[in-house]
Length: 97
Image (cartoon, rainbow, N blue to C red; front, side):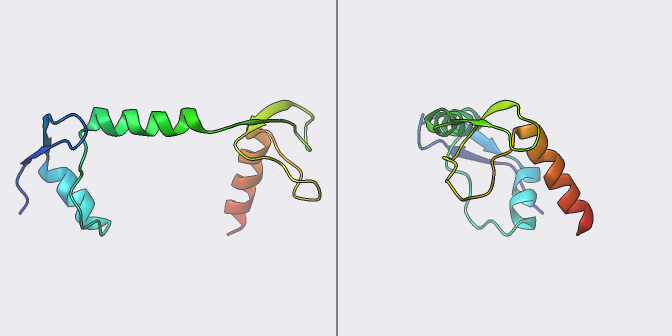
């Protein structure tokens, strides 16, 4: 049903293939627009967004370990958790659902 398409990256101007498998993946998820960037430009864009993110030092409220989080903890808000404790808490919540 789908055939490979050659598209042009809006960032670097290079051609890239939008494969039939990728088109099917997009359709299954209801995406209507074709990708505008090649894989390497998409990865570079994601990496740039990550590096711009500001991290804040915390002491985990559960285990006492030092860590960094991508948000500024507020006084009176939820106590901050390190990445390990957060993952454990999230897994426990998902198990209850």
